Image (tube, rainbow, N blue to C red):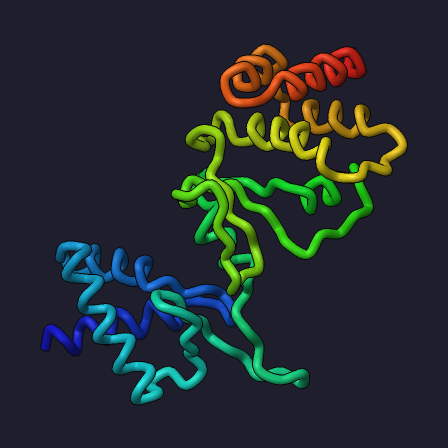
Length: 218
């Protein structure tokens, strides 16, 4: 009876996801633990059994395995079977709860500093325990942040990373300083806090750039 009840909860949870949306077993286990009043460790073990059975018996025909702990619901279209939403997966794994932010040369392109389109995308995230690691499944480079990222400092660190990467990317924007001023204004960043973080975690050349941005925005 217990196994049957667990299966029912797991199946219903899965069916609540949209097509292509990443389904993390850790989230299903959290839901099961709450519903069945069990520990998360017990719930994770129960979910592993349920997922194996659902896949083997094809109880949810469009449920696909992506990698350990990650599944998704596929959908048939005129172009074929849909794949997992990589953008959503990156968000769930590395960016949620203010755990990280996009950085690197591709981010410089996104904010208009350069037309260069690098192949790799860089993510600074608290999940990264090494200075640099590549997630080849998602084609992203994970970087350990200069300090723990949180809601209060996320945009500050992202801005300082931009200043740091500007030395390494060919800039072709007509007025890079105006773009940087726009970033500061959009996220309501305070120059005293920018400087405080730069003094602790970034180089002198980054600090000099902050002065240039502040003067442009004055």
